[in-house]
View 1 (spheres, rainbow, N blue to C red):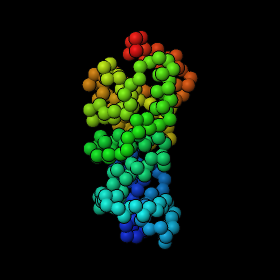
View 2 (view 1 turned 90 degrees about the vertical axis):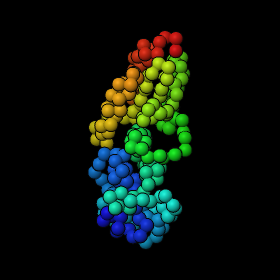
View 3 (view 1 turned 60 degrees about the vertical axis):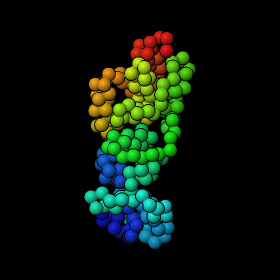
View 4 (view 1 turned 120 degrees about the horizontal axis):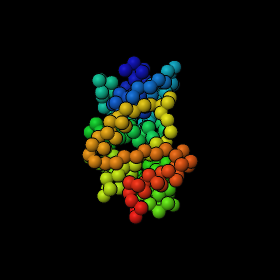
Length: 210
């Protein structure tokens, strides 16, 4: 609240700080992000990253949570894209949807380089193309073979050490398995260094005729 008030009327908590306030991401260290609709005046202060955006004045861009002015859920997810690692952005978006927020974002059926790499990997090895970024119950999954009830998720980083650990991933996979889905998770390094193992695993789940 103090950081927002320091930047005057119309300012709002934004970006990763807003995502933490909305519970789309777990708290992490670092500066607080604030967006101001003003294009001049105050500069960034110690411990605060100031963003400027006149569009913040538009209807629906700002609301309040715990009495703190904050960018709306949709605006928060839009601001996050390109400012954090892609896999974290996808997790924040999933969590927002899981919590029931209607984002209505423009659709991009393959939102990351790794997802496109995985689709090319499948084509190269003659494996049937799945549905991409689709809802399964309350979750959105990266790849779905609907008939086989098979879900594949891809991660930008091989490990989560030093990054935001999102515990919901494990719960989400458990829930999908309880619904009868087989779930696998692959990283970019695995695609590059262990392709034969992935092809064998996919073939085992999908059947050699896929």
